[in-house]
Length: 418
Ligand SMILES: Cc1ncc(COP(=O)(O)O)c(C=O)c1O
Image 1 (tube, rainbow, N blue to C red):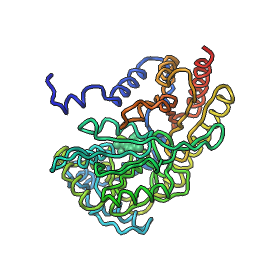
Image 2: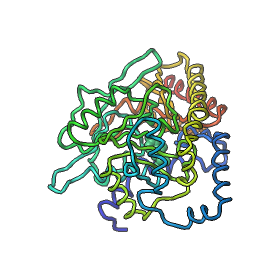
Image 3: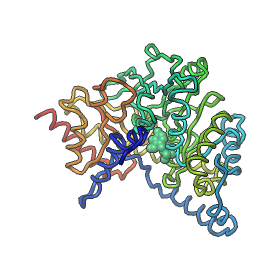
Image 4: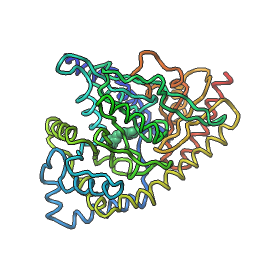
């Protein structure tokens, strides 16, 4: 096939495609797999029961059901849903949002594709602008989203060593340059893959930097407050007209309903609505319909705080306990302080070999993780540190996580002894 330049970009050598393909193939054999690799949330019984109940109510109300599945919505989202979300955020945080500040997308992944390409690239006067990621490692799902290569630029972190086996990344503000070629600054908070939560001070400084250059600060809140609330530090989300706050119904347990939400100034909301119309006419409606009443009543907050956050907190502590007992002092290791999301980010300093090799060895033993190199992008040189790290999803069964971590310990110990 003769592809366009854009077609060539999306069909060749996309890191995420290669990885997803590989993960899919790894899962297809008959042996049991220990799936600590992907980004799937856990199936939490109480939360799953809530979705089933909402679906039953929808089915039992024929005119509501027919309207939900039988009509296209406005490309910005269902007006009643937009009002319900704005109302809940206003009550919770004292913001002053209206439905003009909320856009729905078919998953927040699609929102990022739209935002990055609405903002980065050559502009009307021919100058080229880029998205700045001030803190690597960052979410793998961004790395291939720019239509033009070179539209992303990224910075290495400052690494704080908390103790022998724990570290935390911080934005290196001394090296951070926000020139006129930067179209927006983007961070995920909590961060996928590291579980980092940028401090309120870091967010305030990034917000100030973005504001001083009149560019948006995009904050990906897929795991954050007030839902799904998989965040273990005491922080509040920030929003002002200069911030684009992205949220998602995926990590609270509805990934297949593909519902993302942006909270932004009306200019950005309208642009995303326009792009929704061009790319997909409208959004899927079921996720919005299923959760609208939960936003109105605040039930989505209760389930997040009382069920979802404690669930992941327990899983996180369990996984951390497995790491401590399996790794012990067998080789050098450090875990990023887990402050939110579903992941442990493990660093093996001075590892003899790369974590891409470790990933292959683990795959042979039916344990699937994600090697760190995929979470580093927007830089010209390879980053050795990322080659010493892996991401482990701790949302799966406790026994699987325990076994997976024990196998990781064995393989890393082998790499040291060979
Ligand atoms: C940080 C982050 N942002 C965005 C997404 C995209 O999620 P969705 O498109 O399901 O809303 C994910 C999914 O894993 C994620 O981890």
